[in-house]
Length: 462
Image (cartoon, rainbow, N blue to C red; front, top):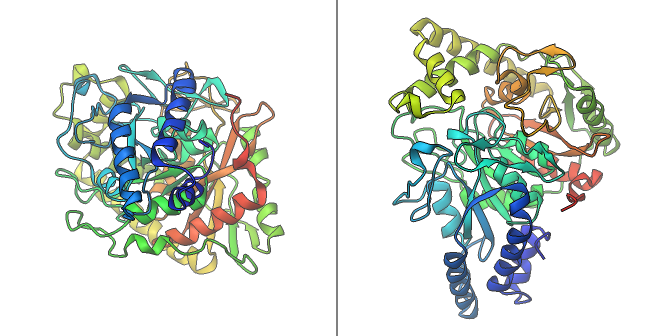
């Protein structure tokens, strides 16, 4: 039961073929069985979840349907506040922190009927694309326990890949939804900024970091988006279109659809195994009728823009915390942020504005861009980060994530969907990028691709 899609689970709940309690118990058994191996769920609230499932069943008996997620077991990233449930942000500073209110994405999932089973692991404050922290340790890849699950939503990705939850939320600044989805053979969507509101008391206008959905299929991503998307006046760039925009069919006729294929986004080093797997994606889409063209797309203008804005955000958000209590990655980012000048911010804004204008013209020619999600397959879990690719040394812990964070600068929706496996059986994802605000179109192409290839149906050997 735990490997049904969330959409299938909802149908069984609606028709009375299973109860919310039965569904929860199946997932709790799965958590007990596999979580000690992967370390994905770091705070479990089984008793609370069972009370909620019992109430969900009473509602079903009375003919009351709370919303599109009624009765589904879910988990929330440990960056998202959960009222009454410990939320550590992966930091020892907040090891015993219990929020009094839910984050907007958590509140909307609960209002839609979802049942919270716990929190998923994340690196400290979501810093980096390898899920490890001093409180809970590392999350391991379900396909090879000696490898990383990616990050920073690595706990969510591993929990989904192993059937511990039906759906999960995550967040993405530099690939934190997409990289772990790629590493764990699941699906993740980085929505257009503002599509899923994330109000902030200190960085209300910051658009690089966004919350979003993770699931095992594109159909389930759309299901979760139908619950969490929509306007929130507390977010100044919130999109007014409601979650109902994600309730339509995902079938898409690719005849004549124009797709640009960039194998390296302008010269980025790509691991040879990753390059080989992702090179199959253009042919798969062409066989479905799409017009796929390889392009020499150089997105290197995103490099400085991303790093400057990210550094500024870290100094703003975490600069007042006791630096001696923070991990090395967070301290490094704060230090870079304190070095940012007004001239740096001006340059970052010019670069990003120019890139947005150039990509606007690009999307007049092409409907979608596809590229590798990650530049490497899952790496050893003991490694702090990827230090070289194909023998080319990388300057710091961020550099191996460029294929994801260059896309973050585009203000565009981007999905990670399973694309295949390396010769050693490690998952590799392909990234589908659409024009800004075309989130549903991206999910439609993801749906068609996953149906045609079937890579996402291969489960880990746990």
